[in-house]
Image 1: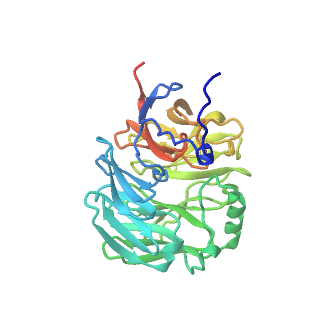
Image 2 (image 1 turned 45 degrees about the horizontal axis):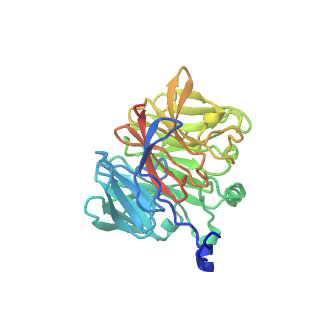
Image 3 (image 1 turned 60 degrees about the vertical axis):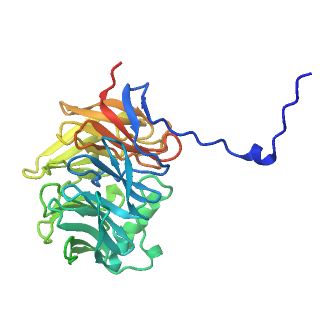
Length: 390
């Protein structure tokens, strides 16, 4: 008779299996591109796709963690915490090597090298902030806020692209016509200036990476109901609509600047869910650019390489606007003859798109950074643009 196996306690039987640590480095068997896990701690995430996270030298990448903000040395891959506690509306100043962020109703700046921190300004309206940017000279911050804040439950905010009920929230928030305005804050004196007062929902404030006085922002809401993409000068002059709808249900959004500040790029669909494009407008001439994107290669967010010759995309989930048929991949795109030719870099078939991967190129253009939960917990990864040797 075989020996009887030792019995297990009920606690042992009900205990979940230990979490398996994601691999540190591997070559994706489907794409033959090398992937590296940069983060050590579960819950580490990269920034939103248009929020700069890199120093000008490209040596440091800023990420958020469960404990605050940390930097990853992209050469040594060492990780160091620079800000303790939850920070929001985060953006890195490339030249001054500072991170600017909000905690409560105060905006702070922290050195990425020394962690020396100073408060810049305190203002109750900052709690309602939507979008945050630092200009090319790093002497101004900009964002949008609610002019007369109410208790938090009366100020609905955008919590991401994929959570349940977002569509209804967007409709309600747009219809509420809550008075808002854009603002700038002097990074040295803390002086605040407000302009462009409106009852439209103002969001996704970005500064040109080269023109210190040019702001891009959006009219938020269901994309088919708003004229979304706008620019304005920091003195409140020069309000300009970047894209004009040409048909019913045409949508444009997830806008971002080229690295030289000459072009604004955005996702365009003519109409929604039918024909897909990566579109651009040359600011100096108003020339329109369009690259067709296959439905299967459409992405929630796109980004452009520092040299402006390549694009990246983070694919889409089963509930995205391109479903059914869009792919769960990190893509590299090469523009040719009016089309974006796609190369798959990372298989995200196990990624839950409630977490947006948010691709960005490293400053040297050799890697693409993204966040993913493909192994369960959220981590930050990089994939090499160049294919690994086979």
